[in-house]
Amino acid sequence: MSHPYVPRDLNLVDYAPNLLSQSTILAAYGLASLFVVSLIRVISGKVSKISKTDRWLMCWWAFTGLTHIILEGYFAFSPEFYKDKSGFYLAEVWKEYSKGDSRYAARDAGVVAVEGITAVLEGPASLLSVYAIATGKSYSYILQFAISLGQLYGTAVYFMTSYLEGDNFAASPYYYNLYYIGANASWVVIPSLIAIRCWKKICAAPQLQGQKKNKVR
Image (cartoon, rainbow, N blue to C red; front, top):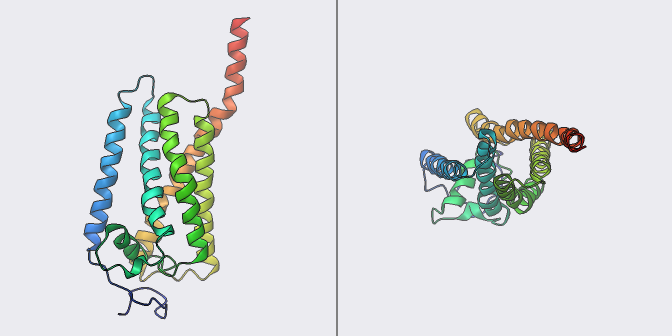
């Protein structure tokens, strides 16, 4: 059966079309994300001495960590997801997303490498950030800073490789803007803001330490 992706001559043997509708796929992802954020928001409210900003950051790191591990992890280790005929949700997600970037269905080496590293390293590290914030670990800001830089680097590589290869992998402008641009925008804006915040916190740490020493004297 012919596929809906661009370029049209992309060879996908045994391609199976989506069984779930776009609205069902997006609604399921949205509801699952809302559940995770709400759960962490409630749990974080029971932890003393955590600011509102840190509570929202815990929500973000839980959301992005699970997204990296579950969604991107499935893609990285499921090279023939486009053949799935069972309606398995994760396969349906990537068949749908490939309409915005067919490099996923085509198993582009650069995309697979970026997603694999993200799933294996940044996913668990993001969940570790949730724990680090909740328990006030000294490495919290450094960890968040490092993950944010990794996310920004991965996103930059993702966009730059597409541009260098012609940036013609979307089935239509609608899918291009919704998936390729829209779905990735959060991983540009939010990591940038977190990196800036963490950088300021890290730079201010020696000064605060010096003030504490002076008070002791």
